[in-house]
Length: 210
Image 1 (spheres, one colour):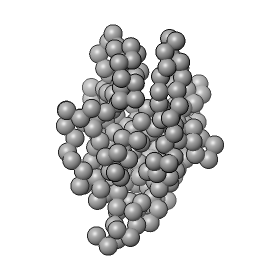
Image 2 (cartoon, rainbow, N blue to C red):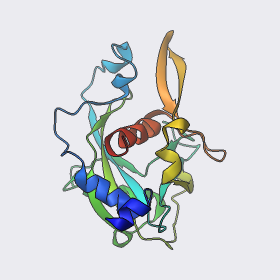
Image 3 (cartoon, rainbow, N blue to C red):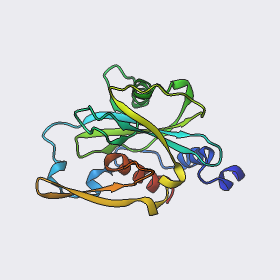
């Protein structure tokens, strides 16, 4: 445990925190509704769609980073937004973990051989109608990426230390059908991390670092 204690934002410490967290179960209640209780946007007419994202923590020794993407501007939905690699769970995916790894490879070319899956967070329900399974993985560094230009404009790393500091967790809002919609945002180096991505990061902080 000395290595973990001496490097609180290392990949080794992150792995230990994940191993020590309570098991996720159906009663866990995470999602955009926590910041917007009773909002009418949270009553979708259709059933929630299942999706999975990979939270890729890159092992850079004492100071791990988190790999994020910037969605392509040409996309119809959520264009230009910062996101974790991931997407809809297909019927042929044997598990959310498999879906997250598949989508990650399709979007940024990060192979499964570079990722060690270490657990999952509780599902996160988005206001856009998705039930998202956040899959936790440790990524070996010195990888090369091949971005799918149809889906991703950029990929970048943010220090885990920055993302797990609540001082960097601001709140903002926008109007939706004349009603306020509240969300977290975490601006970093010219990138605006907000919405569902920031909400999942906040959940990660609450479960592992408080």
